[in-house]
Amino acid sequence: MEIEISKITSKGQVVIPQEIRERKGIKEGERFLVFDSDDSIIFKRVKNLEAKKNLTEFENTFKSMWKTSKERNISKKDVEKEIEEVRKSKA
Image (cartoon, rainbow, N blue to C red; front, top):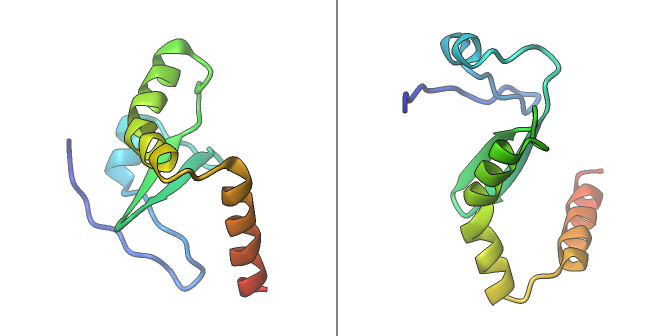
């Protein structure tokens, strides 16, 4: 795993370093899932997510977070409500 440092712009954008984009073949306009986990932010590339290998990788990436949400009894409705509240606070 290679570690690079990036910074956030005034518009809230984060740059993925060029070397990583080239190595991973990331092109302009690609989509990522973004997950907030305590003091970490996780980006998961959406490309080919439906492929079994990538779905398994996706599930493994989020397994501990899903377990935590289940233990804390956090429902999909709770998440949607939280998203709505955050969006209202930014408006």
